[in-house]
Image (cartoon, rainbow, N blue to C red; front, side, top):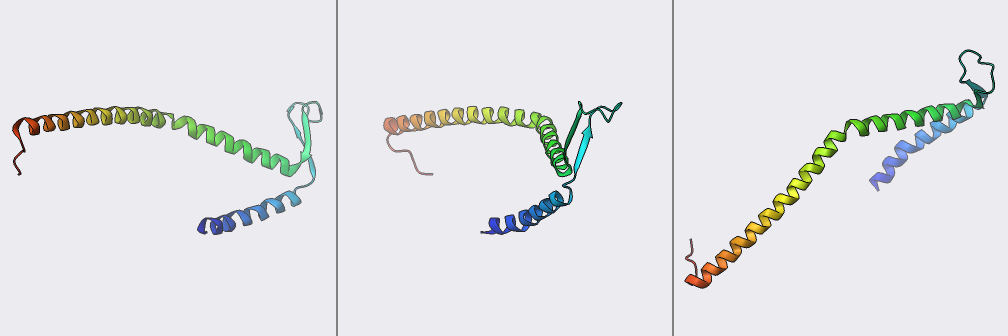
Length: 117
């Protein structure tokens, strides 16, 4: 229930702002990719301005996520290594525990009941 309320409080105003941004920036603009001849239509793209705004936002999110993922690679590698080590040590501890229980059972059988502490 709280998650739904938080989503409404955050995403509803964000959606309203985005719709207003789209409505306010409907005019068509040309993105010229040729810096020497901007009037050249071969390397130009015409679209409403909000399309370019959204593309810039999406591109920024993708680049930011990629950089974050790349810089955290060493931490993921360390976590994988430590997880493998933990599994190996847990298996070794289980093996030693089983061996200790086996020896305790053999000692109980051989000497009768062990004295209480």
